[in-house]
Image 1: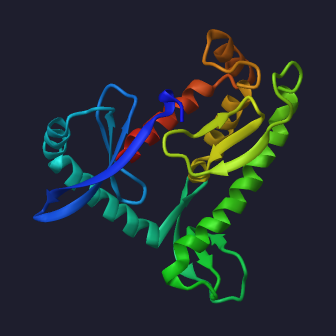
Image 2: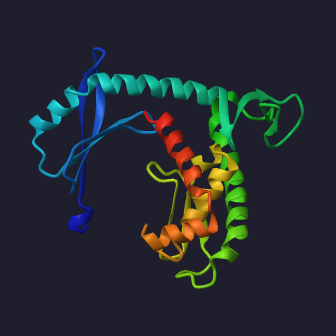
Length: 239
């Protein structure tokens, strides 16, 4: 492992509401401490290498109220996700279908899921279905837009990979992979399209230079409006 990628992981615990709560500590090459509650509801703190334990514990103890609030928000979010889902910008409540079906049916704000799906594993089943929907929808957008980028591109036709990404909506690698966040499926189609176009612009410029943004404006003139909507969504969802 190279020094630039060096990372050490260990655990400690702190008191929250009178209980010991586990904290995952990731020491790495960075300058500041960063605290977060992961998608699994786990507490994680990233710290600089050689960060003194006294400084770490003081940092954690000074953020206990923040952590309590975030964990409470996580619990609320988990409950909501057991009852409904966001799909292409619309909310659909879960309800078991009275008809025999193998796939969910979306109708008038209801997601009718198959009778064979047990409620205890509903979210896992829904995620598998969402992954397939995401692959189909994202691939259609790539197929539609790639002809607008293929000439002069620095890569060949990109290969789609749908991932759960914590801090990005998408990325494009020099090896030709376009990675798109599964959570994009929750957003309005026009915002998903903007993210796809953004990543395809990287097939010509692997940075966010003036040239990149000129290309973005050429391909999608109203992209700034959609970016603003996405940033507001990120702000509203932050926890």
